[in-house]
Image 1 (cartoon, rainbow, N blue to C red):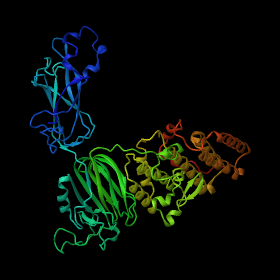
Image 2 (spheres, rainbow, N blue to C red):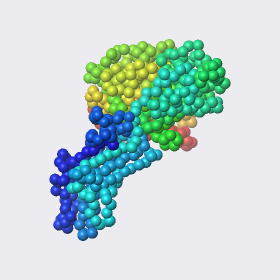
Image 3 (cartoon, rainbow, N blue to C red):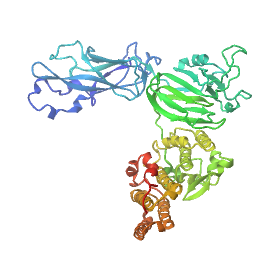
Image 4 (cartoon, rainbow, N blue to C red):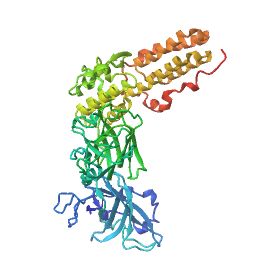
Length: 613
């Protein structure tokens, strides 16, 4: 039992309230005069004072190992019970349970008491195959004690319910951060699960090579059978063993020479109670672009909660995989090449993370919130990007800038998708991590994720992960939007539009040239007013260049019409801002109406058809 509480309505005992009496039904329009405020009460759990007190209130009878939750809130539903004498009774017919903590299984019992502590109603919900997810309201139907025939008054009349007795028969959720550092190099699955028994998780493996178990690899060791896993970062990894392993020298339950399976497979982790799966660390994932991490709300793996594509870390490298999945009881990490996982971060509740967007950090009035780093610091140096990768270019103010030359502020202003989008969100993530905000990653984690993404050439997964955390909500000031993401939209259209013509211009008829211009004109009319100056100029300059380069393909009237359109665009240029702004209606609703498929603009159905000149 987690406690007993008194039912109140705005601080007053219900028995002093003027509830509707049995004979009031006929005297006036009941529903017209119904006051819902009188029919709501709340209970916060407290000590019951008896020897089974388990409410975690630091009382003498607390037993933290038994209490599924530290606190709970109860609300009530008031119903109308029609009586045989053509009147009615206001009754408390539901006990509505809610807690900020998860537990398993879903098992809650509720009793209503009168002012003499007699039970006047009781109810329970017991779903042994179902978990309770935090902050979920669970209505429990209440039955009068003792039961009475239909039409007769019951004891759970609103004036008679004085207190509530609440019991929860489940297991408390305990956070787990599984690092496996207490397990030795080569430890096998049975030893691993014995060590993990008290944490409520179990691990297993299904190898594509037929070896169905997981083992431990100590990544701090040197001279092992797999140098790629020797990342020297204090990691003890779960890996799928390679075919042909032995446990003979000695036969002690430890693999003699641990090595990860080149063919991969699936590492499975199951939790006794539902958890919030925040993240895990992935090591030495080199080749498989279709590898997935899948979180499920059940042990059987039938109810998928979230699926994440695993980033390519590169040979001997590691990165954090952000899952952010609630109510998880199973994690499957599936891949068809080498690799291992560790540092599995399981929480009881979703963290209340914060993060500011690139659009926030690049504004001069927000430079005062920059900590540790300066606007003039170089991107490649800050993130440890060296060699040929430091010569990669991002686009800033329509100019190509190498990563080794680009400042952090320039990276925040990078235009377009791919590496440009990663650069923007990388700097925002770095500043969030250094700012003191409740950010999802540390500075070192951000740097490592970005470095691995750039070295591997696989940008999108890391960009999406950082973007999600950068949009959690900014604690430092107004950050209504990140119009840089909308700039991706403008660049994607520009790139696809231009590429289609470059790839198909030999097939263009006169009709196609006109249709191509009309398509771009429509896009400018729909989106141009939301663009900053650089994006607007990029689009209108191409509009003019295409028109002039292909002047002979247009009739004189069409050429004049499109030239006049360009003049209008040129005159409108001065009305655009130097930077995108979040302080006014910048077309967010308009932009959000377009889905990703429309962004790609599949031209093959629009152009390149045969037409008479």
